[in-house]
Image 1 (tube, rainbow, N blue to C red):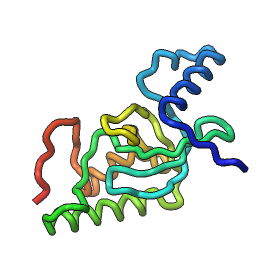
Image 2: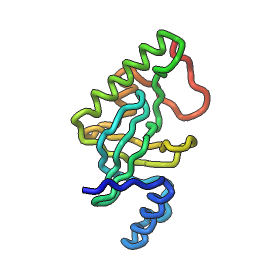
Image 3: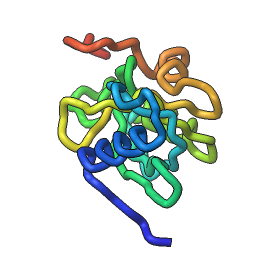
Image 4: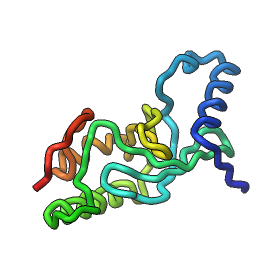
Length: 148
């Protein structure tokens, strides 16, 4: 089977064309989903790289930054934050391993090559799992609180 990869702009154009073809109200949508996905790798606690199944035979590989949560950084000079960041990354890896992954609310992120979205793991919101386990904090944008 051939692996197809497209830029985010091209995927958006394809989605709009499909919505037009099928008469969906998604033409006006600011976000897309739900889509099933396969894990490629965990970047850190709140960012993962996924192969998102957009249409049969059409997958988009992209990084998704979780909406609504912030986890500690694992690439920092602060030892206490680094350890917490590694633990958050390991938590996300364990949660996504061998799980059914669904991505919703996909939006363009402010950084190139990364999108924002919500990830459901076996029906549970990954952001909420990170927060309830103590590996993440609620985040709505703006300045982040220090971890140490």
